[in-house]
Structures are given as structure tokens and as C-alpha cells.
Length: 204
Ligand SMILES: Nc1ncnc2c1ncn2[C@@H]1O[C@H](COP(=O)(O)OP(=O)(O)OP(=O)(O)O)[C@@H](O)[C@H]1O
Image (cartoon, rainbow, N blue to C red; front, side):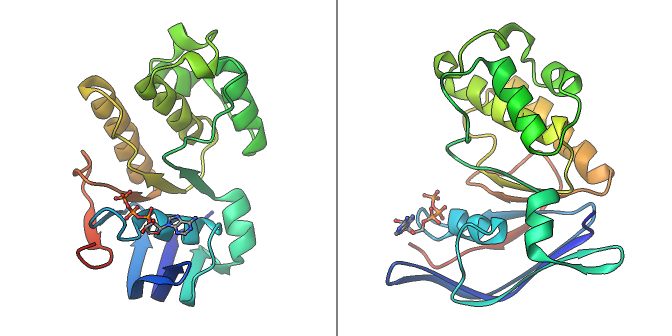
């Protein structure tokens, strides 16, 4: 279990290019933070640093649970979800196979409620490569519900969704926060949840 994420004095570069420095952010149980900023400001890079895919130049990323600090490797392996732009889905599997695989790989859980709440039932026999952008994103988001983990790292999660599914996933995000979960999301448009905004980088 995780009850907070603290980012202290974080500096991140890509190649030789510094993206941002001295970034501080704290997220507690039941809270959401949206990361905003220009294209290329470093929002995705910050999410990737929290997920452990990118090494910061400086600063600290600290995960805590009810008993105190949780080792970052354990936190990322067991308690953190990341859904990025590319969704991390395999094109050749059916949606049902892919969701079952992802759920197992992430520690197991029930796929039924995820399928139901994201309207995936009619899509389950289709190959992932045949899904539209919005359908694909709904399938990627389903793993958040099927394999519960407290910290969700989301990169523009609603961008390809139509109004109906924005609202449906908004309700799932609110339920996640009500249950003590945390959300850190890179966005260009506000999310349909109460969230604090943290601006990343300069004007780009
Ligand atoms: N693998 C990489 N190697 C080198 N530079 C990279 C790499 N990936 C991204 N960058 C650069 O890092 C900078 C920040 O990219 P990032 O995706 O974090 O920005 P962003 O704020 O999420 O942008 P957007 O709003 O366009 O999604 C960009 O200038 C990008 O070109």
C-alpha cells in the first residue's frame, strides 16, 4: 500500500537538454495532481521518472506507506500503474486476451468490473490492432480497474475519449480517490476530478 508520493528538488534532462529543475510535489492518499505545461516541457518525462523508466539528474522521489518509506523498486513493481501515450498494448492479441494478460502480469484481479465500466464487452473478441484510438485507450485504462494499485500515473488519459467515456472514466478516477488512491496525470485539458495543478518547465 502507498499513502504518499513526494518529489523533492527534482532535475530531469533528456540528452544534453535540461527540461526542468528544482521541482517539488507531494501527493497524499485521496489526492490528484495534474501536470501542465507547454509541449516538450517534460510532463511525460516526469511521469517516466516517477515510474522508474528515466533517471533524474538530481533530487528525490520517495514513496511512503502506512509504515513509513517504501523501497522505490517495490513500490513501482507492486503499487504503481502507468498508462502512457502508447498504451503498452500488443496488437496481435484480442482485447480479452490482452486485458487478461495485463491483469495477470500486474498481480491479478477481476476483469469483469473493468470491462463493464469502460464498455469493453462488444470489443473483447477484436484484435487490439483493429481498435480505434479511443477504444484502445479504454482497453489500456481497464487495467487500472482490473488490477487495483494505489498510484496511477496517467499521460493525457482522456485525450482520445469521447464525452461519454471521459465522464465514465472520470467517475472511476473519483472512486479511486475516494478509496484513498492517488493520481498524477499529465494533461492539456482539465480532468473531471478535483485536482491540484503543478506546472512543469518553462514556456517550451
Ligand atoms: N528518448 C528521448 N531522447 C531524447 N530526448 C527526448 C526523448 N524523449 C523525449 N525527449 C525530449 O524531451 C523533451 C520533453 O518531452 P516530454 O515528452 O517529457 O514533454 P511533454 O511535456 O510531455 O510534452 P507534450 O505536451 O508534447 O506531450 C522534448 O523536447 C522531447 O523531444
